[in-house]
Length: 274
Image 1 (cartoon, rainbow, N blue to C red):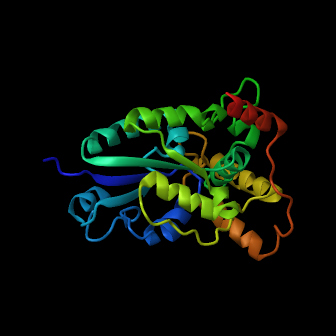
Image 2: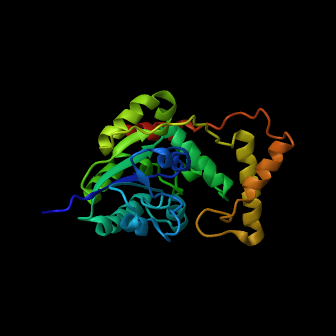
Image 3: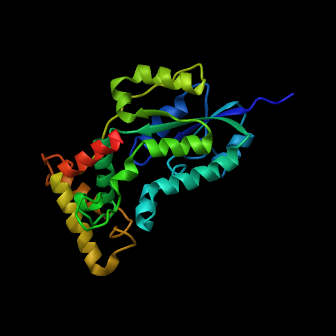
């Protein structure tokens, strides 16, 4: 007689799609599910030990590392999608035959996602302007090609590696239709209870003046010879610290919101259609 497989809900967190909020406020409070996401439950050194040793038959593992670090990809000049494929192939080998896998993928609306990724890049050492970063400057290679943000190829990779297409939702759905989202997640994951979603807030943190400040600061660091690999002046959060000081002094009060150039918006629309 075959022993029923344990159920493993895999939250494949993508960079800047609400992973931290979900890990802190949603997944640990979902009754009927044993959460083994970040940080790993003590005294286990990693969540895989927890999956083998904790009681229960339905586990939820949440990590951005499962799909590959976006920062690592553009620091090393590697395709984010290729990194995702490699990580998921390794993951599939680890869990094959052991679990009934239910992958879920959190997303953001394309324009909001692209802006949030760029703002994070700026705050942690980025030296490229937004059109340079996304490669809409003729003759200049992109730091992060917009094609890397296409959804369909990523869904295909997940389905190929894990044997099931993921349940997808936008972080914006948490604010606009939390009840429907909770019900749909419960049905997909085969869990009788529904997750609750505490109020979520967005803290983007960089407007037009903030962008100019970060670029000036990061380029100054770069010109002093502290430039790291790829397109970052350094990987520390120096710009973040100075942005906080600027806000405390009221220097960034009432600044205009940062917007995507028209060329980037058009490319994102093409991504959606293709």
